[in-house]
Amino acid sequence: MTDDLTHETLDLDDESDSNTARLDAWLEAVVRGFHVSSPNDEFRTKWLASSRADGSVDVGVWESADLPLASAVPVATFAHFVKTLNAGAAVIPAWMVTDVTVAPTHRRRGIMRRLMTENLESAVAQSMPVAVLTSSEGSIYQRFGFGPATRVAKVRVDTSERFRLRERPNDGGRVVMVDPATSWPILSAIFARAHATTRGSVDRPDYYEAARTGFDWDEMSEDRKQRIAVRVGPDGEADGYVAYVVKDEDADEAEVRDLVATTPTAHLALWQFLADIDLTHAVLATVPVVDPLGHALVDHRVRHTTSIGDHLWVRVLDVPVALEARPWFADDRIVLRVVDDLGHADGSFAIAAEGGRATVTPSREEPDVTVDVETLGTLYLGDVGVDTMARAGRIAGTHEALARFATLADGGPAPYCNTDF
Ligand SMILES: CC(=O)SCCNC(=O)CCNC(=O)[C@H](O)C(C)(C)COP(=O)(O)OP(=O)(O)OC[C@H]1O[C@@H](n2cnc3c(N)ncnc32)[C@H](O)[C@@H]1OP(=O)(O)O
Image (cartoon, rainbow, N blue to C red; front, side, top):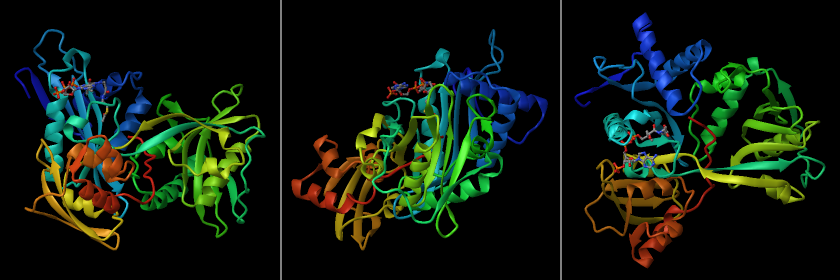
């Protein structure tokens, strides 16, 4: 990498003592970077199994072992694996970037920039249409072409007697408590259906299975607090679930760890279930910003938003593949210029849309509208409209061209990603 730093991709399958020590040191660097306690043996074993299952590619940067007090722990880490993103009209491969850390002793000397630049080049070499990540801070990744593309809200819902749905779900379905240890086939099938139909959804890393079936990654121990309820629809098919904990019996609050529903009725039925938990009077949850729950309540104020934040960041790498996978909302043809300092998405592209889908091809025509690749990432899943970005000074074009682009690009359901990675 530089004279005193070496850059190495871990071998997750080598079980020799020396390589195990290497993996442990890499994991220590990650948890240290995020200020999490050092892992115990159970965490390490489960982390390795999950990383292998995901096909994770984990890179570390080490100082020379000849330096005084040289540590086995790398000074930087970077990982990616490939899953899928529901882009609204098609599900496409997504290059998922994670575990980016640089030690305080080595910060701000370009290590992360180098790792990210090389990593995105690998993604392009493997024909990835988009890279995605979730970010610890708000101003790191724009410089690499990532734009915040979905948001989540944190809510506190008063589930005392004030909680009343206008209409109690009454379609003949029921909610059943299931044993977390054996729940995974049901939960993963529900999530797969939600993923296939939810714009902005990213498929889940393998560690979700351990999290849902009895391992608490934060506490690094067996999870004996989490409960799971599954909603069974009138046809006998499981169509939603909620995983929750009542952390402290005195706190009166249930905390939702995961709520996935494949139908509107299942969603409301699971909220009614949460409201019906005795000895609790509030539910804390992370939910879509555009959420029907408030509108389904007699008193919408029982659902109180405590914060809204960005969640999934998108970096378009292959403009035609990415844009052909998203929905379009008018029949029109427009030439879009994308400016990308890293070059991957740079160029002009004709978007010819008809019947909700577009054919996108490189073009030499004069562009109607110009965006940088970060702005394209933010527009991609439809969380923010063209007009808003134009008024933020982020899209160039004539008034008429911007209006046509807005009619073409804006519409459809608000995106939602409820996968953390
Ligand atoms: C996808 C994820 O994993 S998100 C998690 C990111 N990791 C963390 O938050 C853990 C704690 N932080 C860190 O480990 C490090 O500070 C990192 C990884 C964020 C940055 O690593 P560094 O090697 O210091 O970054 P590097 O020196 O390559 O900086 C590259 C550019 O990003 C900028 N940058 C770096 N960190 C930050 C930050 N926290 N906020 C804003 N800008 C930043 C630098 O100023 C630099 O800008 P420039 O090249 O355009 O002038």
